[in-house]
Structure formats: structure tokens, C-alpha cells
Image (cartoon, rainbow, N blue to C red; front, side, top):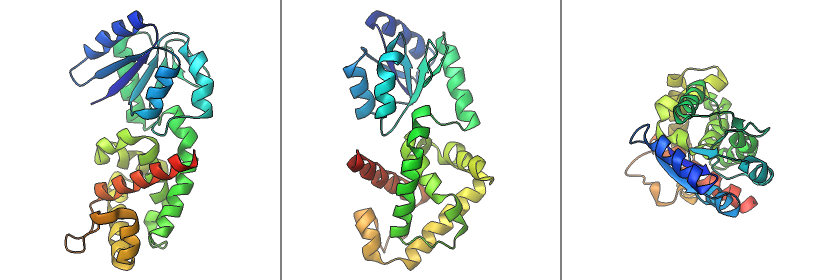
Length: 233
């Protein structure tokens, strides 16, 4: 269910909220006044989309660039700005643009800004987990883990969103990404010590239950990366 944060004048934001929610029952919108309240919501909660309605982009832009959210949303503005994807005037146009971005495999602007940091963290985490570096999954595994952390909505559908995006970025097919990830998990669970795995995955590592699914593995990696990034802020 896409969640949208509308930032701007209260009356204007309510009008846009009705327009967005009229597009379908799947949309949920929340309004915030410009300034500290909006910035605080972006830092504390996860949104799929953030629409700046007035001149908020000029006010929040420097703050978001200097200290972007850990889980950045798409940023849209009615008036174009250097750091925003802008120029949209109607709710249905916003929805179409959002869908086009998803289909093209694009990431939110602020997600790209944090991706390199999460890639480094993910590479270190994979080494600590003793993921065998001879596996072909190493070509994309740190990037895949970073994508989960910088844009959590990708986790909503691995086969239709995360795997295709990773495949496009590394010249593979979604099926190959899924299969190589599965092999990496199986190889790691076969070669790493249980103590090492429990250190990062806690009680979710159960020798009797077997290896985690791809989703379970990625969710735990995402959680560890977000915690690590929060400690560095």
C-alpha cells in the first residue's frame, strides 16, 4: 500500500490528499506543515512518496541533502528544484510518473545519495558472515543488500521489483539473481559457524528449521544495515 506524505499549506495539502486517495483504495496519504514537522516525519517514518506542494523544496532541500532519511522516499515537487523530481500538476500524473519510475527501475534521488555508504556496509557484513567470495553472487550481493536498505519498498515484491532491478544493474535476469542469492545463502549456512550466524541473525537461526528463505535473509540483512547506518549518523 503506497504511503504518501504531502507537505505544504494545510488547505492545499488536504485537497491533494483527497485527490490522491480518490485514485484508489490502495493509497494512504498524510499531511504535514512545512519545516520541522515534515522533516521529522521523513526521518522517523517510511513513506513511498513525498510531494512538496509549495516552496517547501527550497526550505527542506538543504536539510534533506545534508542529512537524508535512512529510508528515503520519492521526492516530487510542483515547482522543479535541483534536488527534486518535479513539475507535476495532477494526482493521476503523479501516480503515472511513480509507476514509470518503478518500471524503469529507478531509485529515489536521496536513495542514490546513500547507496554507496550502504554498499560498503553490506560488503563488510557479507565478509563477516563468511559468505564465500568465490560465488558469482558476490558480483551483485552487496549492491542487492544496499538496495533493500536505501529503498525498503522494493522488499514488498522481490520477484517483480527487487530482483528485476538488481538484474538490470548487473546485466543478469531476475531468475539468475534469485537462484544465485539462494545458492549464496545455502553455501553460507553450510560453511559458516553457527555462532557467527547467531551473532547477526539471533534466534532466527535454527539448525532444525533449516536455512532462511531469500526474503528472511534479506530482511535480517536490511535490519542490520539500517542499525549500522543509524550508529554512524
